[in-house]
Image (cartoon, rainbow, N blue to C red):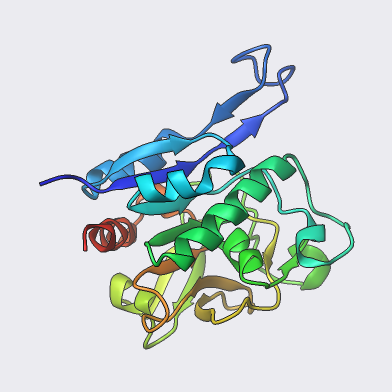
Length: 240
């Protein structure tokens, strides 16, 4: 059986002084994103920024994964003034926003992780909290120190959501490496998970609106507990 093709967006690294891979800009993605898609039965392909080819990309892929990133969405994309966002590549943001809007319009599956959740919210007209510590005082460090793969805080999964059906638990421990979070929800999105301090940890479109549009703030690509089920559900949706 043909494996579904999963497009994954990339980071762009211009810091050639600190990171010595190349003296020229280079794309980057941690290996575990691709490994999880492969383990779930999909075939990952990487998507360099090419906003002029959105339609052809969407026609080629069966599903889209927008992963975590060092790049923050510039607040001008949700009509806020810049305060604490760490902006690295507007080209990346424009590309990902265009892809997300199109993948939802044609009702192909979407999985967002961390930056991919935040960008989904902005694509649908929502806003972001630019820096969590400026917004809320919490005992949870959402931008945990190394190692980044160890679960450090609790997340409550909301009943009657797609995520609840996938995870199969009311509470899970997750790893956390974000300093931004969801502010106002975008159009038609619902909250599927929340941290004890009130920070939104999961959003999705209801099944009546999309066969699979799910996003989480934590990093399931490290495969802690039931996290592989999220990738399996995503790839299975791309097969249907």
